[in-house]
Length: 472
Image (cartoon, rainbow, N blue to C red; front, top):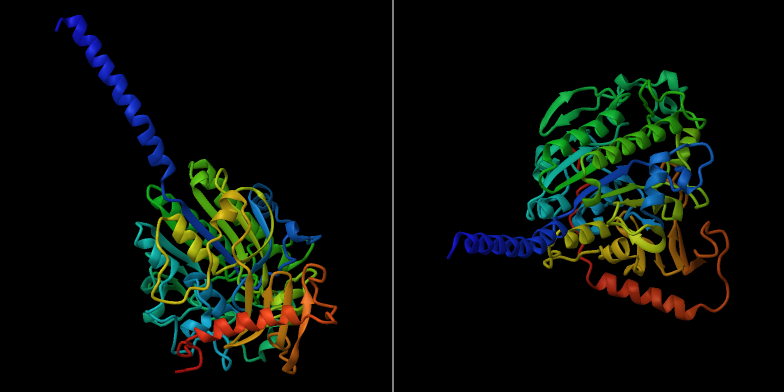
């Protein structure tokens, strides 16, 4: 070949090589595993965000999630109290299956011996098998013994409080009397709550005035250090669970008082995380979720939140106890829109597993469904029903727009009388989300459908050993 011919030959090879590699590189970029962040509030009610109708709490960043992403109006958690709800979101299973639900003692306490069994597969553990870095930041409440801490359940890193922020109380006043005092009389040092980094206690009692801000900062720092590979961060705030604490920066900001100050500080942390993701070019490949573990603790009056138009709150199987605000944000990934479909916190395990290219475990009953089609394309949700467990019993069931109450009981802290209903009390939640007007007339076909759901569920139900009842 002449020099001129050689030049053209190599030039053509370069062009061909470039053309071949363009689609391969594009495919690699499109096939990159998405990052996942779940932000889980504590005792925040359905009506506590401005995007869900609160008139005096300002949540501009959560509102932005609702506007740019998806806002769900029929999203449920698996229990109306802390421990079982947290077990469910991380395992994709009803807590009765893992033993993380009990009708004798509804949550874990500092004197509890049990925790989430090692046989359970958490979302963190599952994602690690696909190369994810994983962090748990915030409230754990699935066992404070070494054998049950987040680092034994698939999390590479843990920074947080192992149980509720009202535990390890040192005051001699009765519990409710102490917490119903004026805000200025409630001190963070009255709760000897430990702060862990991995398996070591680094602060006790933890300064709860700054804990919300520190959790958000810790989340950003973790992402900054692990942004070059896929990551999963589970950020579980201890607030707005009583006792209520807020930083000086946010004290007195909200017209709703101290409770509103806390929600607005949580919102600001969400904004900091969103802004960081955008600045680092991570937003378009990250799914950010915000929801809460159960409804508001209404017995604490203005120190508790609001369930909006929903009935009752924390501890109950009325809508206010288990229906939660749920926001999904991912620019260019999540298809924006208002979703009235049914969804559950247990669906996150299945959905995120599928999005990460993982198969869902087949050696156990899973209670989540894949809602990725709804999140990514706006398709109808594949979830058709909700089971409302209280402890180890089913109190109510929802199928489509209908909900049947088989057992009803009062709120957490004011339990009231347990009442069984035969036939069950039936409501149409589309026309009556406040559960005020019992349906009358012939609903035989509807009730038969409920009976079938219960029969199918109970036929395959194997209850786990009660992890909550044993004490030291």
